[in-house]
Image (tube, rainbow, N blue to C red):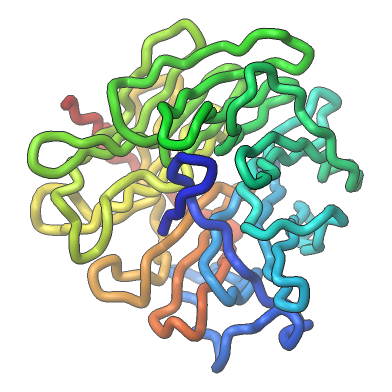
Length: 344
C-alpha cells in the first residue's frame, strides 16, 4: 500500500491503537490471533492498528506512527530493546511519519523523517536512543522537497524533487558539507524504499518494461555503479498488486527484504522474507508464518524488518474494520536458497 508524498512514491505509515482506545480510534471487534509458528516459539502482538503502517528498525529499536483522533494527527512511536513502547514527545504530523532509524555519531540510536509544509519537505533528526525529544533540522543544501530518508551516523540518504511533477533524484549528504553526493539511478522508474549503511545505499525500484513492469533491488555507493541484487517482472499483478521488494533493511553483513511475489505457479516462488549476504553469494530465506495468504487473505503484508535475532512485521486483517497488527517473533530460523539474482 503506497501513497504519494513530496512527489515520490513511499510506503504508508499507519494508525495504532493503545489502551486509550476511544481517543485514538481503535478498530472495532476483537483482533485476530497471531499466526501459529512451527515449534514452541510464538509471535506476540505489539500493537493492534486502526490502519496499516510501515515500520523501521535498528539495533533492537523500532518505530512507527500512531493516530490521535482527538487532534486528527499522528504521533511518532518507538519501541526500545526492552520492549517498552512510548510516544516521542514531539509535535504531531497531519500525515504518518516516514521514519527511518540508524546510529548517530555518538553511538546512540537516531531517527530521521521529513516534516512537510504546503510546498516542500525538509528533514529532521531526533536522538531517540538518548531520550532526547528535541528535533534538529538538517541543513541539507540545494533546496527541493526531501523525502524517503535513511540515516547512518552523520550521513543521510534521501530522495529530492525540485518541482511538482519534476524528476526525483537520490543523494547522500554528510552533516556540515556544502555539497551533495549524487547516486545515479539505473534508468527510469520510481524508488519506493531506501536504506543506508555507511555510505552504501539499498533501494527498491519499480520501472516500466515492455508489457508490464519490473521491480528490482539495488545496492550502490556514491561514485559507483548500481549493483543489481534481485529482479522480478510484476506480471501485471492486477488482482493482488505489484510484486516488489518491501522494506529493504541493512543489519550487519546482510540486506533484508520481503519478496512480495504475488503470482505463484509462474516460476516466481511464494512471497518470502529473504536476506542477501553483502560479502558472499549466500542468500537465505526465513522459516516463518507471517499469517498472510497473498492471493486470498487475510490481507497484504505491509512491512517486515529484522529486530535483534527476530523479526517485526505488519499485516492487514481480513476485515477492514479490524485494521492491522504489528507482530514480533523473538527468533527466526533461516535456510539457504539459490541466489535469486535475475538479469533484465
